[in-house]
Every structure is written in C-alpha cells, then in structure tokens.
Length: 320
Image 1: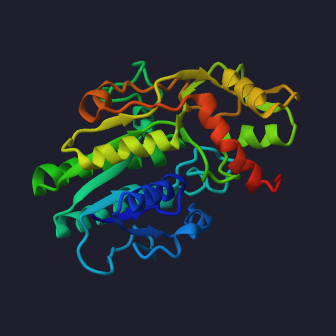
Image 2: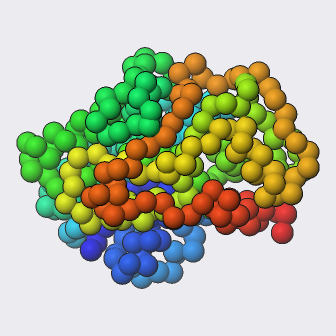
C-alpha cells in the first residue's frame, strides 16, 4: 500500500512509519514539528519508499505522487503535562485544530482516494471513568470545558466525524483508542510519567511521585501497540477498538519498578498532588474486542519494555 501517516515525527507516528516500511509499504510522512521530533525520522532519510512532507494538517492537504491506499491520522499534541512546552494545555488551539480540522482534511484525502482511514483516538475520551475497566461501549465521564478538554473533546469530535464520513460517504474507516504507551522515541521533555521517572532514575535522583501514588495506569510497550494498530488497519472493523495493556499498576509501584531496573537507590520523593483536577484516577482498557476481532493482546511485560527503553534514554541523556 501507499500510506499517508500524519504526525509522522511523533513518538507513535515514527514507529508506525518504520513498521509500515518494514512491511513493504510506501510511506508519506507528514508533520509540522510543533511537537514532533525530526530525530525520530532521521534514519529513514535514505529510504526510497519514504517521503516526508512538512505540513500542518489543519490546512488543506495535498499528497505528492498520486493516489494513496490508506490514511493514518496521528497528528496531535498528546502530553497532558502543563509543565511541558509540548503539553496540549500549552497548545490548546493547535490541539483542537489537529483533532477537528486535521481529521476533516485527512478524511477528505481518504474519500478522494477511496482509501482506508484509521483515526488515532485515545483512552482520554473516557474521561475520569466511572466504569472500570473501560469497554468501547462506555460513553465516558468527561468535563467538556476543563483544561484537559482541548484534547479529550478534539478526539471525541474526531471520532464522531470519522463515523459520519463512514455512514454518510461510505469511507472505509477505523478508530483505535490508544491507552498509555511508552518506549524509545519519546521526547525527554515530553512531561509524561515514563520519561520523567526514567530520567530521574538514570541521574541517580529520587523519583517524584505526586500525592500518595495510588493513581493507576496501564502501560503498553510501543511495539505491542503498533502491532495492534497494524492489525486494525488491515481489518474490516469500523467501530472503535481499545488497544492497550490491561495490566494495571499504581504510579508508586511503577516508580519502584523503574528504580529496581535502573539500580537507582535514591528512593521516592513524595510531593503534593499537582495533577490537573480532571486527571483520571484510574485507567485500564478492556481489550476483549481486540482479542476477538484482531486476535491481539500485548506480549511484552512492563519489566521487559522498560528494559528495552533504558538504553534509548541513556543515549539521549548523553550517558553512554
């Protein structure tokens, strides 16, 4: 296939570019570098099956070279951390545009090319869930005007628009709801928990845990996630599918795992809870549909995934 991937220089987008190229597809990567990192694509520069286009998906999209067979829309700021320059609370308008105008424009490309379309949605559409674990049938518990809403509502709108194009125009669409993912390719200054704690551990510092650390997340290694996304792209499933790791762990337990794997003896530094008020307390995917429809479930354990990630972070920090 000839595939357009937006957000190609981002953490997930760059892994998808690499996977699609490895599968023998031709890839057109698109990014405006607001949050994407050019370093993530540097190793693809000489690949004859890869073309990069610097462009903001909020504007009309022209794809060079003719017809495309698939469009994968992954362009959006994704970090909730207000202290990060790449956090979506610091890029609120760009985030809304990527979810609304960007989805409209990429759906237009898919419609014009009679191509299959895959939307990168998020577990954030469930908000601070009252159902646990979260099934795709759960409508969510969200604050439509809170500081996090620029991301949550952009993705909820994107899902609605994707289904509208499927139902009204017959576009061959798919929606993946992505849960917490980590691995090589994350920005050091991303602001999310994995890069924050790994950097502290590798510097030999105590790991900062906010509040009592009882808030939970379910961390999926990026290779597992990409496998699930690829299977969804090749499937005929139009309704949303959760892709994530159902192994739930508290942030305090997670910090202890990182200290152990990095041999950091500095311990834990408890601080007052500075999380945003609508930050979900618990998050865990129900992946029953992914198992039955895609025959997919994660295979890489948390300890294995963190061990795979440590060399990347050490290198980026100049420690080796």
